[in-house]
Image (tube, rainbow, N blue to C red; front, top):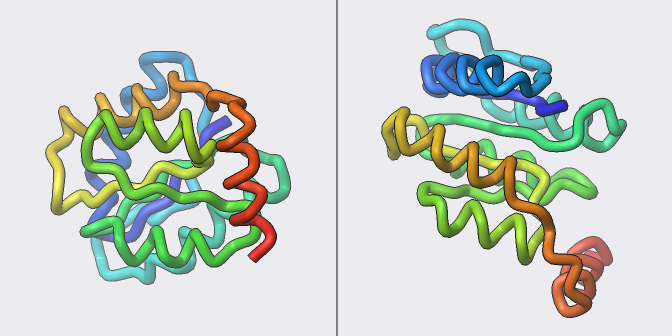
Length: 143
């Protein structure tokens, strides 16, 4: 299951991603925000992060204006590896090398079409399980 979270600037892009997930038959849980009026991105980063920590969801997608603030908030949580991606190469690489469990995008940075391709890449790329990448992820977790 995919956990979704966004602030007000990410609402419209999240709705496009929901359409994609529904078309593909991918289960998701929407942790908000469900409005266009001002909201605080850390609230939604924490909700998505907790859902992953509690194993309620396998992966997450977070969206704010640039993706920067919400990724900072998510990465403060133990076990969360949130990757800000605005291209498919980064989305693929972060899954292969970092086993990222949260995709972050900036709704004011990329268009909806590219965002859907990035989501597709992120969700359909498995972690490489190479020893060097496992070792590096373990180093991140020890901090």
